[in-house]
Length: 270
Image 1 (cartoon, helix red, strand yellow):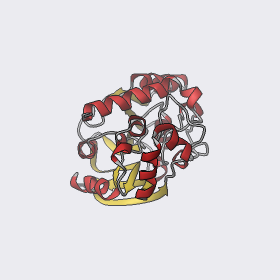
Image 2: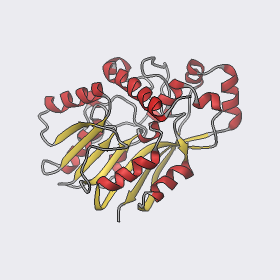
Image 3: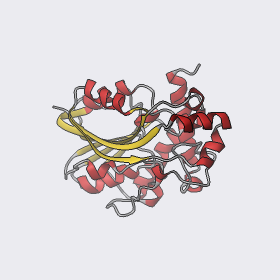
Image 4: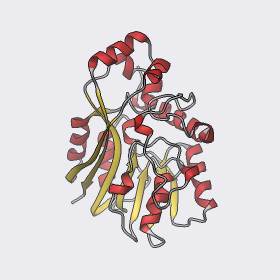
């Protein structure tokens, strides 16, 4: 039986592979299937268009987000922003465009290849107020009361201990600070064979939890003014299911009528 540590190591391996093969996989589905084995079809979860946003950098966009959290984050000039699971740096660079030269952006990721890619992207552009730190989101290498805003894009669902994550977000936020997170949640229960599948877990679908439980973890971390800013239905194409699951499991999954959603949620540290 896989432990939480095993699951995290699986995610780290998959996303390190995505960083190494980023150019090859850029148009593939990185959320919901094995990033090292591109699907021919892209999930609707991957259809977010960042290109119109100020600060967008095409070579930092690996196409694995499930929302546009910076659009709802209320970023202002001079803010300090932390991006959890910063990947190749896309959301960090967009946040930097909002907080300006007087602000600061800190990306946290546990994948060394991703960090190397992000740091190269920042150095290439001469950004001096964007920093990428190696670290575990469940135990951030960040002092208390550091950030005005915490953002994250389709990352927290990948990790098994959501309760620790939201407590950590609360800790690193300044009093009156807030978070804005896009993530995947469920309404209904997957077959066990689905959730036990390594590729589906690492792809952020099988690792997602029930929407009510997700919001409950936010409440238990003492956040106030919790709002769902946006909801989007996620559809898994048949060919992605067929690449990763046997026919019996697919039938069980479809019979269960599980709702999969991308939500963008905000909350405030009082």
